[in-house]
Image (cartoon, rainbow, N blue to C red; front, side, top):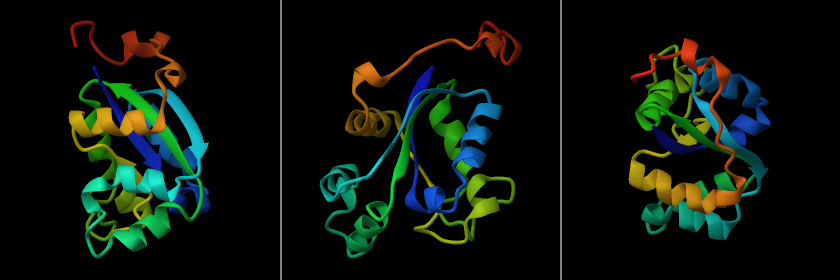
Length: 152
């Protein structure tokens, strides 16, 4: 089992696609164990995107991520990091395959609706930025037995 961070970015919130996107994760059988709507502050943006702060595109990235609320989610599942990233599709909506979230709903590299952690290390670091341990609500859905074999 893995856990990852997913952010429904300001464009997702403003376009009222939150429920549509959340449904994709739930239909895949992933468990949302924490979720909240927040405003990303410039300080949080600098922590989250620390590896990009010195890059020329960073100011527009910070302006975008702080422009409207985001929905932060902690999601659990088998191989959830790669599964979520496959559901999202390529970073640029122009290059993302049809059937992926970005392929179906985005036509931009920056305004690509959703952020997801790209590794276990990133997920651990990012989850700590957005959630306290007390906010995580672990549970086992009763439908799990009908979604995967017991030895998976």
